[in-house]
Length: 545
Image 1 (cartoon, helix red, strand yellow):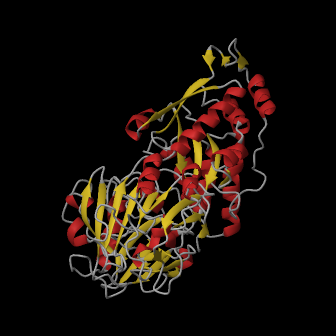
Image 2: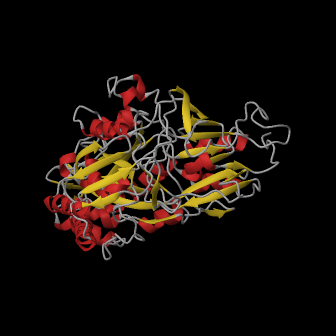
Image 3: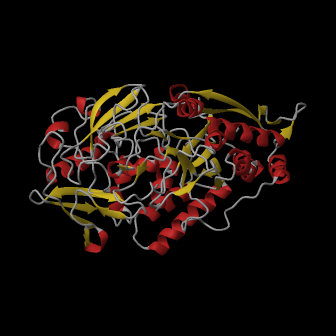
C-alpha cells in the first residue's frame, strides 16, 4: 500500500515508533560517493530500544526485523509473499497441516547455510515453557514442527487456526549459534546472527544500534550500506534534532510536524494503522473495577474532540481494538459522547457527588491515578483530556508521568494510558489484550480483565477457519466490551513521518511507501519498512548543512 504523501503535517503518531534520518550530520559528505554522489547511509531514531534482539524471545515476530527473515513476509499491501520459503505454504488435512519448501541459496551472516533445522529449532524453542517469550500464546495452535530433509518444514496444528500463515513471518534464528547457549541470557540476545539484509555491528544501550549491509543477502545487497538507529525517547527532542539537522526525518505528533510544512526538501508520509490509545481500568482497583464506573467513563469521554484537537483529524474514535473501518468491526458498538447518561449511570449505582463534586460510594472516593509514559506528548494529551472529561462526570483522575520501570509494578491497581493494536487478524489484537488467563502476564491484559463470555468467544474465534463463525465470535467480544468495558478506548491514530526527499523505494525512482502499521515499539515501521530496497536519488549529493 503506497503511503499518502502530503506537504502539511496532518496525521499523528505515537512515541515508540521510529524517527528516520537519511544521513548522519556529524560528518557531512563522509557517506557519499563523491562531492555530488549518492548517499549510502541512513540513520533512524527510535523512542524505545528493544529488550532483546533474539527471535526466540519475541524479536521480529511480526517481520521486518532487518537482521532476520521469516518463512514469509508482508508486502506493501500487507499481503503474504515468500521469503525464506520458496512459495506460500501448502495447506492440507482440513487446515491442520502447513508444509513449506525452503530456499536453498540462503546463508546466515556468518556463512553457515540456512536449513529446515533452523526453522524447527526456532519454533520449538519458542514453545518451550522455559523460554521467556511473552508472545508464546500466539502460537497456541501449533502442535508440532518437524523437518523433512534440509528443504521442507511441516507444521501440524491442534485446531484450524485461520491466521497461522501470518505467524510464519516470524524471524528465524540459527540453531548452530543460539542452540549452543542459554536461550534467555546467552550472548545471542544482544549479538544476533541472521539471514537478513543487515548485520548488527554494535549496540550501545540507551544510545544507538548500528548495522551494516549484508553483502551476501539472498535477495541482493542493500544500497544503504550503513544503518543506524539512534534512541530518541522524547517527541520534542526528535523534532529539535530534525530541525537542527541531526536527523533528516522523524515520526512526530501533528503539532510538532506542522513546523516542517514549509520545508520543500522534506516529504510527509501518513500511514494507516491499527494503533489505538486506551485507558486500562484495573479490576483490582475499587473504583476502576466497578462496572458502573467503567460504563460511565466509556460514554463520558469525548472521543471526537480528541481526534479533532489532539490528533488534528489524523485518526478516528476508538471503541475497541478494532478500527471502525475494518471489516471485523462490529457495527452498532460505537458509543456516543453522553455526559448526562454517564452521570445517570453513576447516580443509579450509588456513586453520589460529594461537596467538591467528586463522587463517593460506601466511603470509597471516585478517584484513581492514571499513568502515562514520560516524554510521550500524545499519551500525555490523551490522559489530560480523559481526566478532564471524567471530572465533569464526578470522577477524579490524577495524571502522573513515569517510566515503564515505575509504571509496570503498579499496573494491577493503577490505570495506564496504554497503546496497542495489530493488523492482519482480529486474534492478533484481542487475544493478548482480553484473555483472562493472561492477566498479569507482562503487558498482556494489563487491566486484568475477566469475562467468561469474552474468553469463550476469543477461543471460538481462533479455533475455526469458518469466516462467518469467526465474525460472530469477534462481534460478541466487541459487544461485551460495551456492557463491561475493562478499558476505555480513545482513538486510533494515523502515523506521520517527515522525511528528507533524498531516497526512492526502488531503482525505478518510485516514492517511499508505508504499510498498514501496528502499535509498534520495534524497528520496522515507517517508510523504512523496506529500507533494504531503497535507492538514493541520483546526484542528490549530501544535503546536510
